[in-house]
Length: 147
Image 1 (cartoon, rainbow, N blue to C red):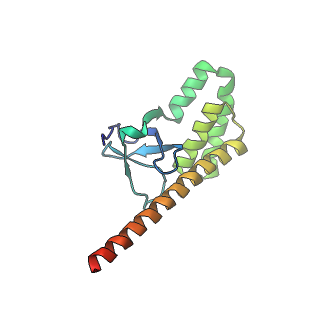
Image 2: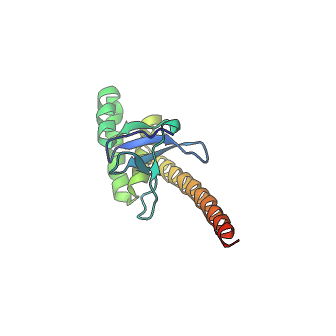
Image 3: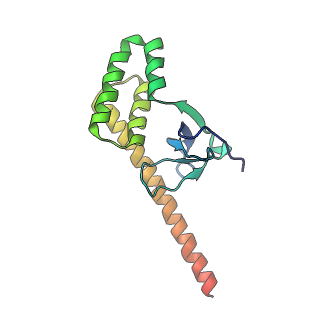
């Protein structure tokens, strides 16, 4: 499978290979992998072309886009950014909440925070599913090796 290359630390949107939803990730230093959970032990995944990865910008770029294209919404977006930062959520939940707000045009703090947290939980569940698959594969491998 072909692997895409992006600038390190760029936000991307990519298909989740297990559950089929679109998710946000941060490109790693290699430019060819991404992290989808802001946890120190989160394993980077390759950025496969088949998963339709796209660069999506960042909160500053989204702010300028809103300011230019929907100026009446800019104050609400800016206030939302500040509240999310003060809420102490992890970086990817923060990005997911702001990305949802930008896409939907909804800047209610509670709704955006919920959307960001729900998206992060969906990624966490998918990763748990992947971990279970890998554990079963390792167990099966060990049984074969011992036989």
